[in-house]
Amino acid sequence: MHAVEDIDRAIVAALTADGRLSYTDLAERVGLSVSAVHQRVRRLEQRGVLKGYAARVSFEALDLPLTAFVAIRPFDPSQPDDAPERLAHLPEIDSCYSVAGEDFYLLLVRVAGPADLERLLQEIRTSANVTTRTTVVLSTPYEHRPPKVDP
Amino acid sequence: MHAVEDIDRAIVAALTADGRLSYTDLAERVGLSVSAVHQRVRRLEQRGVLKGYAARVSFEALDLPLTAFVAIRPFDPSQPDDAPERLAHLPEIDSCYSVAGEDFYLLLVRVAGPADLERLLQEIRTSANVTTRTTVVLSTPYEHRPPKVDP
DNA sequence: CTTGAAACGGCGAGGGT
DNA sequence: ACCCTCGCCGTTTCAAG
Image 1 (cartoon, rainbow over the protein chains, first blue to last red):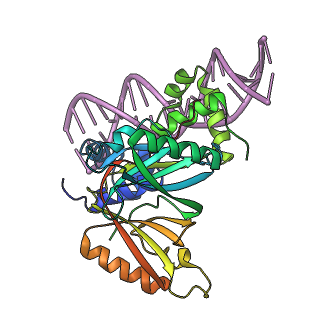
Image 2: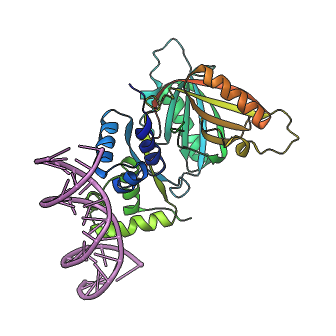
Image 3: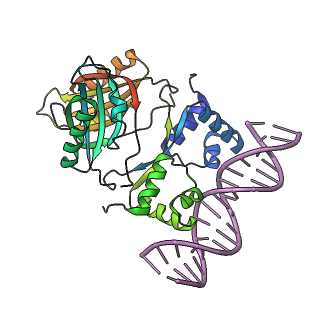
């Protein structure tokens, strides 16, 4: 997978900050014609550099004000480790990271409150046969910042 | 901030999965006219339920293949705790969570490789006067899944 | 990469239930 | 209050140079 350079980086940076930018705006921002920009975006998409577009939502507004990290490790390490697939059906799980260190996976979860968190933890433990260690998020100073692409 | 319900939930779910859906597609998906959907989306945006739109990028393609979690706590807990602001200038930091538990903050960072991670950790320690405990991410089974909004 | 032209979608006005 | 139809205009998209 090749690196991205020059104008493409500017396009990626702009779309990362505002995924709904029109090709017209994008074109005058990078100094090319609309068609040229359109073509570059399509190439970036089919190369997998741009993987898609998503709306940013307020989890508070969706009644999911409680965020937590859940570190998990297998109850029986000799069994096959398929925790991610076993947990994929739980919509409260935002992300699943396989990590080095004491734990096997780190989950980022979003729930309505402590009661739902308790229910979710029990569900995680029984679904994947794992133990959990949970860290509650108190506030989020910032999240999902656009990566630097200009250097 | 009120809860979101019925049709609005469907709109949010659709835009979370594809932030570039046209109002035409959105309209036939939720069974309303284009104008009605457009109006609802604008209300959701100005109520802050929809906070914006962003392109999803491949961090590998951007030469940031190494992800890690960095737990930090102040070297001197008696000093004012302004770590988030002190670290905000570092573009490698994707997210900053204030957490309960042994640590003060949990950072999600993305870098090009171990050498850059080392540099970043030194920068974090000196910028915010903190100690760090780093967990390297080996792989990411899934990330940023759309929240459930249908029930 | 650019121009140019056709098709499409965004977006507001006005009226109806 | 909410929704629909209608029409204008900007945007997307493709063909040709």
